[in-house]
Length: 114
Image (cartoon, rainbow, N blue to C red; front, top):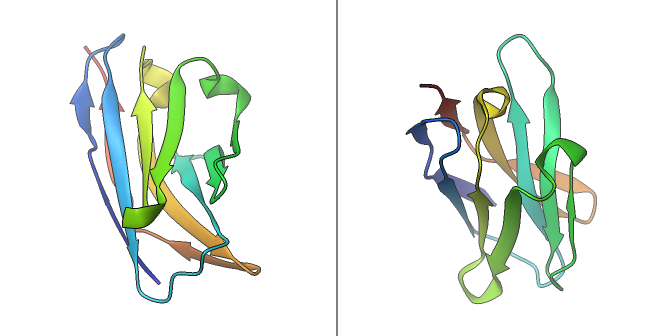
């Protein structure tokens, strides 16, 4: 499975960005897709996950600001990020999970700064 993420960039505090990640290869109908992030000098942390059935969960720091969604026909997951804060600055990694195996994308940098 290969993952191609896009949509990162520089945004001012309070702004919005939308990340996309398309999966290709040996895609199974039952899977979980989502996003993790890693800030400089910190560990990689969960942001949000969504199952192929559409059930989502979020890390507490992003609840109410970020929305994860997916298009199963396109094997694509999205992360709509609103009201961004400087603490959201990180490299965002797309992840695809199926039957206990995780596949990672290359990461896309999100910088929140004035």
